[in-house]
Image (cartoon, rainbow, N blue to C red; front, side, top):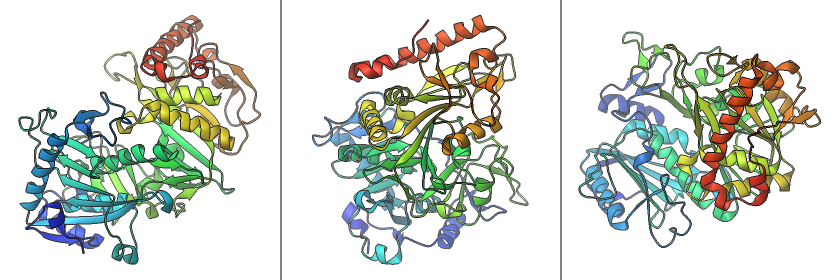
Length: 527
């Protein structure tokens, strides 16, 4: 039995690891606006916050971890006293509820590296969300669960107090203390904070054991070959890794050990804005009884979800167990990665559709984590915006990015893995002049990578980015593969390429002191 008194929580009735149907009943009865969708999924709302609040993330500065943490804008510090105040507020808030929910689960499918996680929350939808996202223990495992390694205190309905804690500067606070294994959420009811909090824990613990923690999706072919897909929002990571001809290992969070790759999570968390069965049949059909829909619009009478409705947020989401994915690889483990695919949506139109990377180039592009978002759409044509996120997930890193990059390069060398840079963005010109690379071409590129048809493909060195441009790929016209040749104005291409190179190098300056000469030599250059 779980005694919440040991955490200082006393008073409420507690439901410990309730079934899915019970959580449905609790959520619909007790949370205004929570309803059942026409497909059987639970529709819930996260309130004021409809996305993560990275500026409110804090790490406790304490002797056991302070020398390891990459302090700065990503990991802002919180004093032990400040954390104690936040935790006290959370405990008092949770103690004041008439009912609480406790979910126990595992993070990590490899038993050697698995964490035991306990979630304490006041909203049934949060409990169902983490029931989906953690690995679900068997009844026997729950009996012997014992003490958790990490505990989430989700008091999202209680606002943080900047006057009480000097390091807190808003009504939200997401704080992690490695010394106690406690994670406290105040002032935000966005469910994703919980899953990403555990991801941050894995980003701290795993590299200390020479295990690479990664913000990526992973799938496996019929021969057991594994591909990893890295990419920021809008690059196609979910679309391209969810392949009916390959088994999904996981859609978001993985680790690479001495034995192979394992998924951290027991479920998937996908965006649903503009979702359709034609484009995303696997995700679409997974939204059924047991799934959670977050912040979506729907018809009041039929409860049919309108996936085009962004009146609440563009960041509409669904959470569901990985068992809802047909032919998912369960247990969610695989062999060592054969292919590492960095996806970028280059709205400037200067990166090749596919290029081969050396381990040093892979380190460089991994650390930079580049994509380019379209700044404006229908009213005129505005400049694309270069976006960088270290290791394609800077918000969740705890150690310096170079540590993860070094591990990636070492894994590549140890297991003869190949790295590829795939541009899912523009060709024939930048946004406003060119066009988006056809999805069928990108799928052909990914298929060729997975089928090992590009290993011996001819390449030529890109004069700006130094990568090996693949010049022949089955299913893709040759003239599409070299970006400069697709531009009508090649002088304009050169000028734009130089602009992007300068953005690359400027962003990398913050990491250059930690980079070795081979990585620095892999940096693009302005001709």
